[in-house]
Image (cartoon, rainbow, N blue to C red; front, side, top):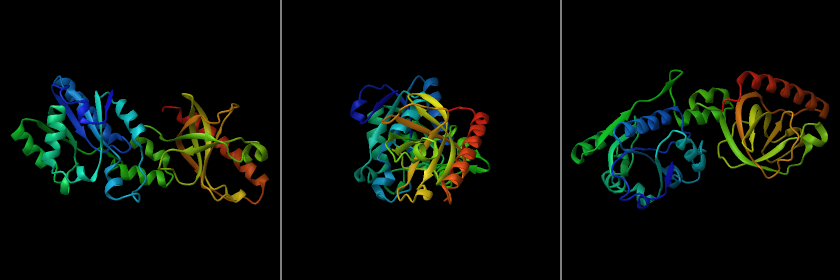
Length: 313
């Protein structure tokens, strides 16, 4: 998949394209349906398939830093879009000037002139441009005048509710990571680098942990989880603790991962933590012996859950 960061990189290179456009936060099943339809429609009409998205997320520009945490930051989002088999992803820098564009101007400048768009595929609730006037009715009318087709894809329903980024975010923040998998088509994952911690797990509890400095914004609720830890493209069963380690009086939230049956130095390595199921909430213990006993129970339960779930990442 080609990743372009401006229409100048594409101008004059495309004879015809089928385009979809969106923020695609999470690249969940609803997004996947949209991307797959764009890919398949492009192939059936001998067009180039293009996904258009934005960086930074428009909400971060329009609202500021107080937006909800995003499910996928741009690098992971691009990786997930690439897995859908589209030809090109165009990542446009979102600005207030772009937000102020009339939707007709955006379509003409970026989609028609920039990418020779012949077909446009949008989600059931997508709208863009000044005053969010760029909805299906406006696009369909413009398409009839200018000679491009517009298709609107309906919502994906799972469990009597629409699959949405908001629904997924709420589940993750509540620690209900097991329920997220059916909405994403994969386990929820965070990424980060393993850094030096206080090593209390190894020194005091006989349970060494990797302290992960997260790159992602959205972190599951505090507690203990059965996870898959991915290091150097190899996947290992593990148990993770998210929280402040109240038994030791920590004041800084951490993500600590104990990889089962593992004895390697992985400091300064990148790790992906795939969350399978929450085991319990965080708890303060009266003694190290009580904490150690609980950790043994957590590991045994986590191992059993992971053996049942399988590493289908």
